[in-house]
Image 1 (cartoon, rainbow, N blue to C red):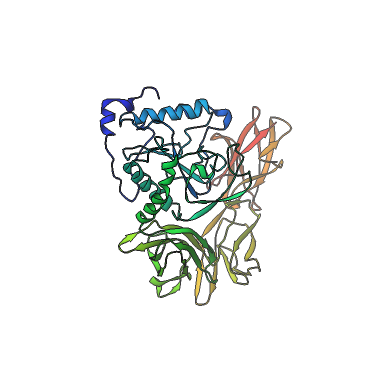
Image 2: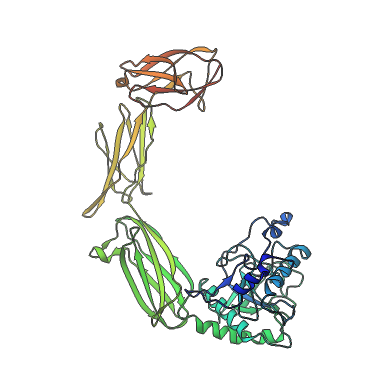
Length: 495
């Protein structure tokens, strides 16, 4: 393992005891605590080792022994882990240490592979089944001797936390898809069922985690189950968005890990609890927590447009388990979008969504009000000719309620029409040339500028047209600025 500041007397003293951590997670010593050389894991760039790789979720935890001596001291553990790290990278050619976590005989848990202790990092610990699994290495060899009680208890604490946040049943089964590995027990592509807490030998041709280590697994499973007070298994959600005024709901599905109560809280974006749903479920029974889209805090009226967090929490006695959170969105009855800018006299088209068949009132400042009908697909559009900058909104209703969008604005800005720009580029025959375009007649005049320097000015005719002759030294960027401050896009002039 080499030398590291982690081996100093001060560091050894700090690591001499097991530390408890709140909120159900065991205290875990980090890679830094163990003196891991982070540059080492980045050496195998050709193997795609630049960044950690992740599975979509964690399904199975494989228990290993490290096949190293048992009689080590507390102070030796960081160097032992570093030696495995170097062996895995420099000899095997792996991206990092293979195990996600390691546990020593003193009951201490250590971070293994880099990438986030609460994330489904893909390790190199169960060939053929690394995707979707977690590797816990018990430091030592457990063929003729059993893992120490402190070690077993640490494994239980670790798995109770890691499986609970992954919504797994520690006494259940999950399926992993085999990939190619020449020591795997199953051919690539096969869907293989495993116990959620399995031994390495269940996946590959090996005696790992040793005869006595493997014999400890049934007790570990039971202890993990007992430590998780309440839990959810495989939660999922059906339904996530609907438009206000239309029927909508969300159902959060799960399976109860134990006989437990559950509560679904619906929380608005402002932190207000708008509704709660609760129930009871026996162990292994389905939970179907349904929110009907109404707000108990608003006299059971439909919840107004917005984004809502839905949090399903398992409860057993006074203890709450790991909650599952998802979201639902109630879209406004009507939406509206339009261009930020337009040319004088140009056609502005406003578009949006609404309940199919709904009458949408479109109000544009200085223009007649339009009423359009949303299509069967829930879309609508309305157009007008821009004779001035305008603010616009849309209003639609269902039943006794109506919804008006926040106002939007389209600014009439000066533009160049001749020579016609293509992709923002204006090609001219010489360094001295004439530009013409349109602007608001009330602008009175416009100036053609480069980096704030006025190159030419022009009055604006009553029909909104202007014309100016300018001279440039070569390829130049210009903008047209109206007296009122409205600014055209930036053009590149190419003589």
